[in-house]
Image (cartoon, rainbow, N blue to C red; front, top):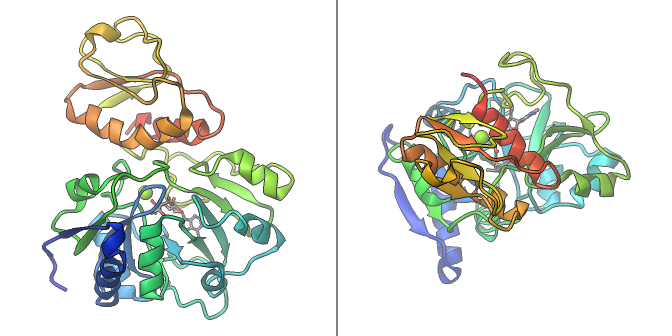
Length: 332
Ligand code: TXA
Ligand code: MG
């Protein structure tokens, strides 16, 4: 593989699904980097068993190598070759395929490269539901590590254009499967001992409580920006960073500010905002999650120095939305 590949973009449509998956699998087998849609966000895939490919992935993203990756597999049989499932993990696995990642003890003989797990004894595993992700994983036949397909610290990509804006010329292939339906990253739960919610995400907390029979414990508050300490090492306080500063829970829009709105009733000053995008006029949190990252990218591109963000309710997917907004607004 050359150091500066020309990035090819191919459309995944129903007719060509097998062909597209075959091309992605061949690229992965050659140590290449392939971006593909999952139901949450686009992932940047590499052969999890190939340390050199994983090293190239860290380099392409500009990601610190202490931050481990999620291994993606097509089914539970493949997941069991990577990780050990306790009783709670078995219950949570019933929610797969879907927007859920489990952090589990590495299985003996786990073939995933130590670089991908940052030398930890645990491994993050996910079975995505998106048909394109499923087709790529099935065609490749080995686990694929895939962080979100953005430059490290940027907003996660929810369409192929977002991927190209960050990674054109750094990766071999982008499979364009349109906009991702969920729009925020997977919910991450550690099942090393008691189930611990490490990252709120596309699977709402209530679904987890339902299968566990009790709510998951919350990970202790993260030591701000200390990369040695966090439980999910990638969950630094400042992340998902747009260029503009962000002001949350806004009840007015000041001159020159852009507005990220939610619901139909806009705050004073909205009429003269530099730009207005609405996460959901109907106040629908599923729609808001699906639009979040692309609205942030668009408002950032309009050049306003500050994005005022209306309050978003904390229930359902609102928990993940508010988590990402807080990270985007964190001082840096
Ligand atoms: O929806 C998603 O999860 C997307 C799609 C592509 O699957 N992927 C994604 O990956 O968001 P990434 O790398 O952006 O976030 C993975 C998170 C990071 O915060 C990382 O630190 C954490 O998972 N993680 C990975 N392995 C871990 C481990 N063994 N223990 C604790 N946290 C882990
Ligand atoms: Mg990410």
